[in-house]
Image 1 (cartoon, one colour):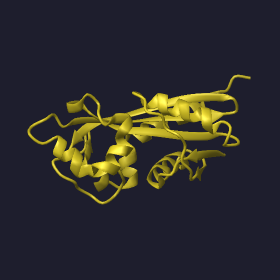
Image 2: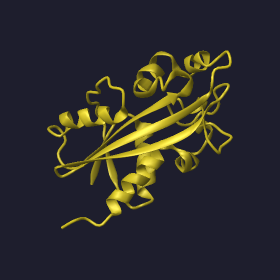
Image 3: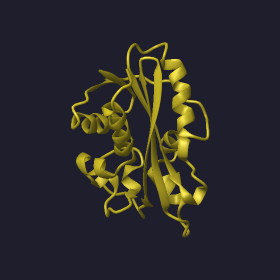
Image 4: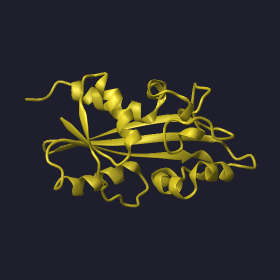
Length: 185
């Protein structure tokens, strides 16, 4: 059993659905943990692990994700949660007004602790920012993000559709490859 440490119910739904298809069961540990201000998602989860290792018994999984806008050198990136709370989707749309590039990438980094080891898994989803909000599903910036190869925002997609494209689903695939790999004796 793996505890997924997150206060975000949407993240838990996405990850547990993707893992359930592979018969991997997780439980939600609904709690927050310290997140340092850093320039990379991996630094955030590695720091969090130094705290959680003493607080969470057994195996656990943590996630940090962000929306990286090309027009702003990757901002909001690691600060996406804060920017979502302060500016929301409407604020991002205002920032991209006046012809700025709408290219963006969603990224996720997982850290899995099993025993004494920590493994990190990455997932990316390139796409564009829509001209306006669309859809009622998902969470965060989902109403304005259209993944490459799609015509709908994440918020317009079912969970199964989103998991075909998303950064988090790609990180889950990397995690599953690790979990399925033969273990050294």
